[in-house]
Image 1 (cartoon, helix red, strand yellow):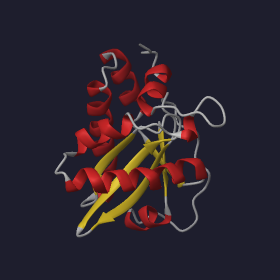
Image 2 (tube, helix red, strand yellow):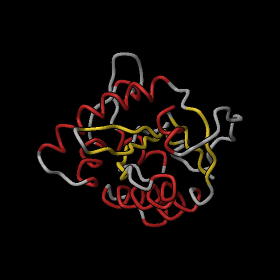
Image 3 (spheres, one colour):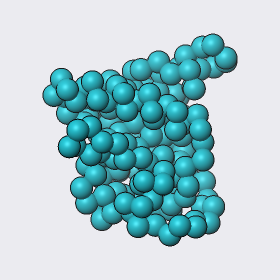
Image 4 (cartoon, one colour):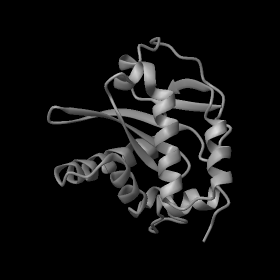
Length: 168
């Protein structure tokens, strides 16, 4: 089971109730996923970020309500494969994402990181990069929110590899 922690704008797009009970924690190794909508000119995207690793994938915002779960699984699977994660670990993580629960976005560390990523996404989109390529670039972005200690930086791809038992 995966919990999607949505910002207010994402909850509105998904037509979730104004009050949401606290959902259970995700059973996958990458933890809960945070979902936010971002607009770049006329283009609107959904950005989903793993709470544990800060791995980030991009999803089309069009049809989000009907397709969020399958699109998220497909994007996460493609990114994990592109990062060289073992197929068994990818399959296990995607299986844990079969059922979905929704909750409010509460972790400010993740939300702040998503704001940083949104800036990077805008630059990559201007260069004409596709969603998977952008996600791979973001996975290699140093982030202080996942550093081992204060003042240090961690990389989302490294944290994800470690969480999935695929450390290099």
